[in-house]
Length: 379
Image (cartoon, rainbow, N blue to C red; front, side, top):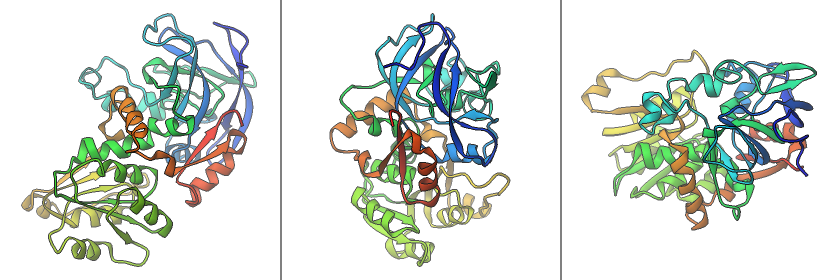
């Protein structure tokens, strides 16, 4: 039964609202306004929970509140805007980040670097004109987090952010593709792109880091070193493709890299932890002409440092990446096929929660007891 009052009218649905920074998620009845010409209404099956949601909840990401977060949604289209021609009612879709579609980066198939990406996805709190699609208690609340705000049973979302997916793949598998899995896999295969025989490492074995390890397993890298402080995550990293493990809680990471590479250093590192000390170690551990791909972001205002002379003398490359440079419209269908073929075992990192248990999911993500929480919206 659709949670709706009919097409082209406002709808009442249930969403997880954050009223102010550091406040819990509260399930509330909200009013969903009709979609605009370039938008769709989606009934959610599931939504992954990412650290970006938790950072926005805490105020670390300056997304305006009160509002609805969530940016790894999967569900079915129940209404389309007048200008939408590539989706139909009933289409199952994964939601990813959105973009303007007409700036130079978008036209060059690089939507992660859209000129208006921060406003459309992270800090705007609504559409590009500042308007919201949500009301609660007769007042507008902020929406369109990553173009979707998918911690809700129904959403109005940018049609550009919706990618059609097959009916036979579980929603809990599809949801993380929109951000965490996409970022990790693409950081490995599309940004680092190791050559056959390369020695590489991933620092941080969370959802993005483990996805990067799964991605590296698809490349020619012969040595894949996983670094984390949780033995259980390191054990899982080994099962997912890591050839060597470093427990940073009791080992000197740089010394371990030197030992494991026979003193040669690393050809590439993907740093996902956001720890400035880990980033410094990653750069120092590179072989000449090596590449460090920076995914993790430290606290706002906390600098990352490196030796410029060493950088130049050894020809090192430090590459920042947003979303693994991914174009979701082409990458997400590819990730689905990799999962179907058994080459991308996303199920190993997912733990499901009922939507009503969203605060329990948030706590589990904070304390590291689960890797990728996925909310099932019918729960």
